[in-house]
Image (tube, rainbow, N blue to C red; front, side, top):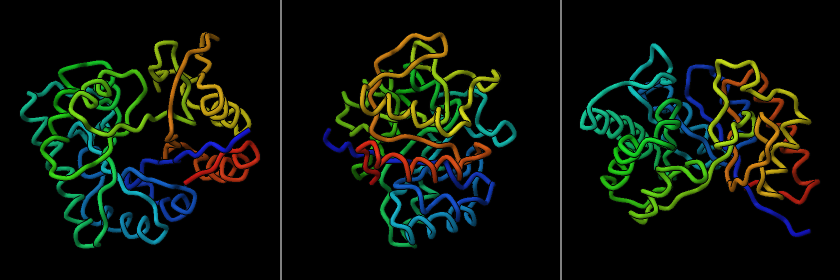
Length: 246
């Protein structure tokens, strides 16, 4: 069997202060830039860590709602959402400029990510933000999502993302965090979950149905309670199954 190459990313800069132990295991990261978490100090700290470990840096903008950690949809005019997302990304770009590092990708956070996957109005706002940035930047987004179609129509480079530590519904949406089975914690189950998506391009939904999926970057959430253990385990085990991380 030939080797497959994947990227492993994590959402960081969200106030957990665990980036120093996670970063050595990542090939890319998504840095909170003020919408749901993060400020100049946290962005600078995490950017410097990513630079130290040669980890690709992405912006992780969200609905401007720190109270709900960006996990609740905000009903706001498209123009206001555009301005907020643009401002969040610009704040990270200013840090990157000072540290002489390039922005590699953008990955929406939380409710914004989930809505952009199915809501054309929200997806259009995110795509318009991409178009306003005068440099090629990748979009991390889920396979078969609304935002992927719009982004590809605008010639935006898309990297399909899947979640190592989350269960899926049969429509490829993530199981709600309100449900007890939303998050995967057991290392062996996470490994099987990821390998199924890599080698077979399938994911087993919570109803037992196998669904087609494609992904080349896999997220382990920085706020999953055993994120370090998951990353350590995947890093050691995946090469045994002809999977390289880079």
